[in-house]
Image (cartoon, one colour):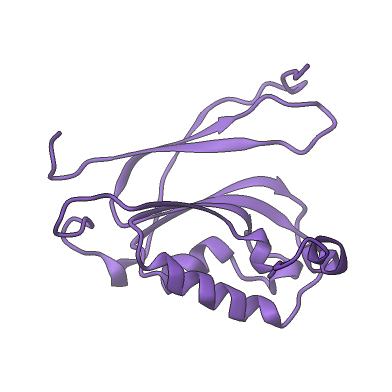
Length: 168
């Protein structure tokens, strides 16, 4: 049975970061369809086979040269979406070469708005995070702590609202 954390964690309001070079008029494509993607980037590690979870597990702790190329590939893929939820991103620690992967992917995908939700801060060693990339200005962002075991890593989710020129 899942229990709440020993110290109560509250819902908190947040603000998105802005990449001013990528701001556009409304962020939506001409057809008005919102293209969504949820992507577990595994800290930029490439896993093509089940055995890679074992043989490449060291990459969750230490930097490696292939991570930058994987993030470039992910950034190119994100260009076709309007709102992207990222899981297992690093907020700029040793294992990512001190690169905030959420901010980096926002730049690569030309997203004007981004938000990093830091779930577990291990300082210079790891900054376990979720991320949100958006072409629409999220005028309301909330961090929601999720219930779990007291001995497990904290989990959270992000909720976002944005206004558009479209009314349904």
